[in-house]
Image (cartoon, rainbow, N blue to C red; front, side, top):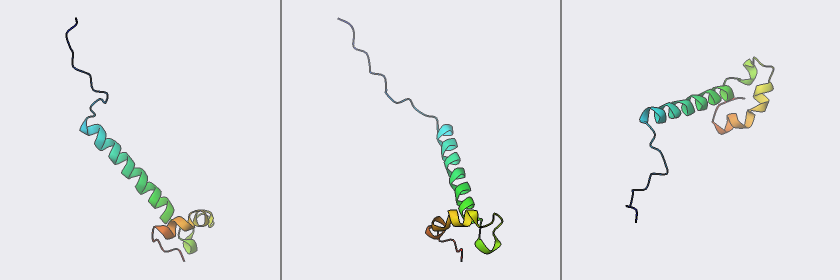
Length: 67
């Protein structure tokens, strides 16, 4: 008979630096998306109303005034 061995974990531990890095990347992407939705303000549109119309409903859902 062979001697019993302990089972190896199925999930490898992740360092806290990697978790913080991933969290920071997610927050940065969310802030960038929020900026892109909010920056084009209709009357002062720099992009010919294209982004304004494309993101109009999202802007209202975020509570950003656009009228």
